[in-house]
Image 1 (cartoon, rainbow, N blue to C red):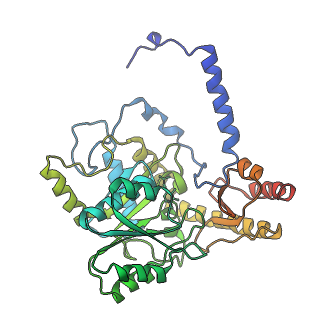
Image 2 (image 1 turned 30 degrees about the vertical axis):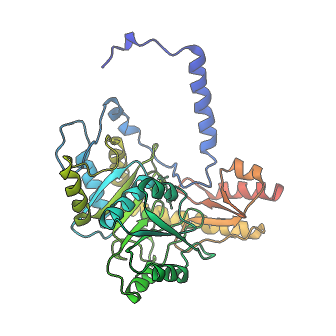
Image 3 (image 1 turned 45 degrees about the vertical axis):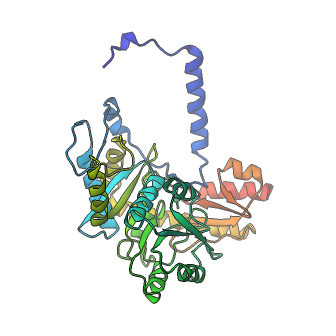
Length: 376
Ligand SMILES: *Cc1c(COP(=O)(O)O)cnc(C)c1O
């Protein structure tokens, strides 16, 4: 540790910049309605850990030469997510830098298993997936979406039929970015069966909904029971975390096939990132231990209550609001730009959405509606 006296204090001007930044973040923090980052958390009991240069480099299930890690908590956390997602006994997972890395991991696995495969995904798939497909250089075809945001099964079946000799690698949306829609996995499996396709892979992008659907009675099939082969869930969304993070889960046999390949070139490097955030497993583990699964079930129910309230208020204001019964994303007519900016609403073409995360209250909705009436 450096001696404090050897570090000069911040110059007055720089200190003021930090204070200004702090205050502006404080103000904006009260107005996040459009993005699914839960701001309702308190990790202050963990701040003492930030004094360590901890690093979770490597596979969480293997011994590491770097001892300042939180691999043990990471394994426990993955075990909890494995239970939530009905993963088979033989599963593998790790804590990622966010939903994007987990999606990249899923497509990476799929491509390694079926290098000639084609990725199918809908128009409503998260924007980052296009970049992942380019980076991994995988063939891919975009499938039409239905107005409710789910993948158009007719278009999917017709496209798969044309490319019958190539393994389909399905990138399934489990809670789309704009509409919170869950692709019909039962319908996708029916197509694969009808077309007698033996070799395929299904990845579930459950960035937000992966921490919602386990707590929703009568949720559509979406997890390893659906079944899918890998899942990506963000940690900073429904759970809430001051830095981005996430969880990737996969079938162990598939991971081992890739690990062997990498071993061949002299490494058991199973994760996408090398050095990995050791605080992410610590924070997520803490959240699950303190809030608890019953606590998240309660939170999801409360979020849905606020979402229903928003649908009612926005409908009364003439904004054509709706939501999927299993989602906290409320879609409505795109309002004036000033309202979009003030409330950090997400917009796409003619629609906007608000996401009823745990920090979003009925009072927020009321204030938004006042603004909408003033500037529709
Ligand atoms: C947020 C989100 C992503 C990206 O996840 P990050 O954690 O931001 O990297 C991908 N897909 C969906 C559906 C999302 O909501």
